Image (cartoon, rainbow, N blue to C red; front, side, top):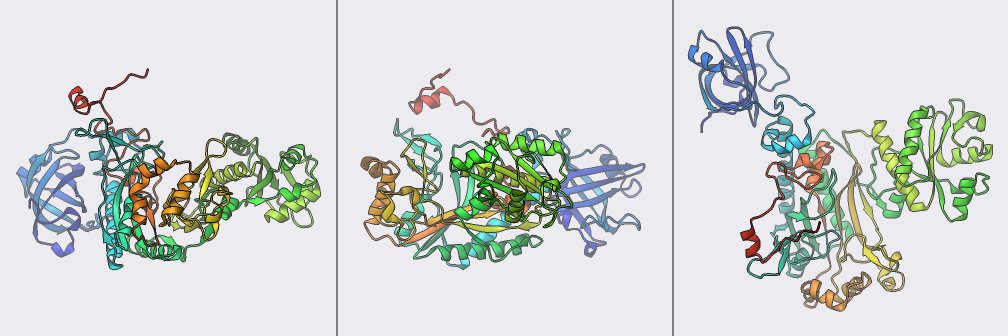
Length: 597
């Protein structure tokens, strides 16, 4: 080793000892005759002192060094002088008095500061990702990710799970997103697909007799990206035989609770995790991945306006629409400019408009008429309706009520988005709180793009709830799936289900989704065939490692949890990928590039 101790490991217990340290120059300060360097390695920082009296040659060399140069330094560990102790550093009460200095590598001027947290454009960070990863902030995140994955492996091993790798090059198996396609050189005109998830493979492992399987799986989806998506992601893929839903939910809940207590003990966690039915989550929060760190629940107030003279509400109710709202506590006097922005935001989200009602400080059970509100429809709303709305929504003095009317799904979506936005803007969410919850009982199918067409809400291999299989052909929209999501702080962390293990039932579900007999045989034959040879009842779940780390670290972007991510346009600025390939490689693959312009 070039060093005898890590920079961040030097302590008072090493006083008087000669040590050899190596790392990057984090910061350099020249105080006249004496030069101070903070030397950084993965374990942290330590201050190094170059005194021309005790080490003249090392001092001369130190005059030339700059930030991010790589140095090897020999010296003696000493106490820092009184008044210079830095309590913010683990090594802040000691320093190394240098005797020798070796320059191991020089650095150009970095494209951004490594030694301070600054607002650097993400494209620059990703172009120089090897520099970005030197920052203590980024190193802490990747170390946290390592600890998360290690804890998961140790936990599942203690519960008798077997880690089994599955292929990356497989046949295209529809999962809801586009596949990444890989051409075969030895079979011209034929293609592999990168797995969106190991769905069929893990079910085949259950049919193979492995009752508890997992892997830290790489998955690939050619879909539009956002802050919590990447073209390639990592998930804990987990499957169990002879289980009911509660067996899986209980196991994951135990894993998450112990994981948080072990790797991020400063985070607050609600235990046990609540379980919300899909329809309940949509009705209360307007989303199937609610942020439960704050209230602002949606209330259906259609009945309050059943006899309304307000034409907008009258027409909506006549067309079987709804009137719904959320109460924002203490915001009854929100400035008109901010209210106008909320109206504009609601319209951008698909609403015809947003109606607001501000309750004054004098509003109460006695003073509850139109004289004690300010509203965009104050002249159209009666005192009785004001009273009914306040009672239904539990609105009180100085509260703000936001109302959207129209088709139910639209009103839920718009109010759900406004709820999340207000929770962020008003600082309602405790950033140190982790509010995990299970969303259960999703519909098995959702309407497709064309009338009479159906798509799988989760995926095609999900078991219908008891008794609902009888409605597959007659009323598919009412079939409830034995599926579940784990959500936390407004993000979907995991998705899973009890799987179909009966060939006839699986073929019926695929038939509802529009697959022909030949398509079923060609795309799913290997899985269906395994059901003919005795497949156990089984189920599983797949928490996303990237999103889980994002939540645990309190980050805004999934890209900060990944060492070398892609941009939101699926580009890697470091390697310049995707990029063209040479004609010789296209020829080997029997491929031609067609100009579509």
